[in-house]
Length: 248
Image (cartoon, rainbow, N blue to C red):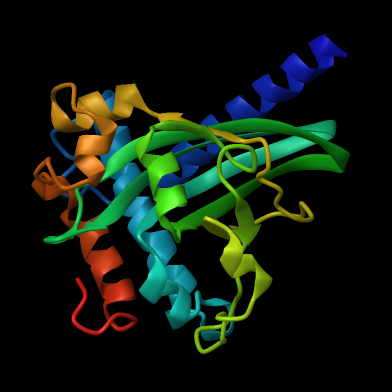
């Protein structure tokens, strides 16, 4: 059984690499921001671009968009483009994401993280899922700033309400510290994140900033965002602005 678990997880990682390569080749188009970089830095640039696209596409579908009441209350947002989940009885998940938080001067520079975890249940197949996580209260934000926590154990997590004009004020899910939104491009039923581990992606973060920077310092506004983050942060500002009068 242990060997089966390892094989499934390795398969998910290989599929994740393939999805990342495919998505990057579809969206790269030879931009000036990535033409002179390679390796982990280029991957970080692509992740930022893909994350901005995920937000734009999610909010561009009114009946599946995040309600404005939720957007207005979100303290931080994290996006994982093409998170891979798959398995046969035993499931596995793996993805690389980027996060930003509200500060006194607008949205913070982006911080990079990974999400990894397994689950039990009747499941079969492999699927890529775009994931958005909104951190709704001080506890959820504190967990994110810690740079290492377990969803469902350290941080309460629930699927967020859908529909741009939906009222979420009385929804039970609003009691959770983290609300999740996902968009599937496969045939995998459901998205359970309980037990998934989130931690800083040191490789991507160091490559993007060109030095070692603290995860919490980035998200609390103590680090200046490089120009390469502008497209992602513009997407965040655009999609969150209308939901919060006077917000950034």
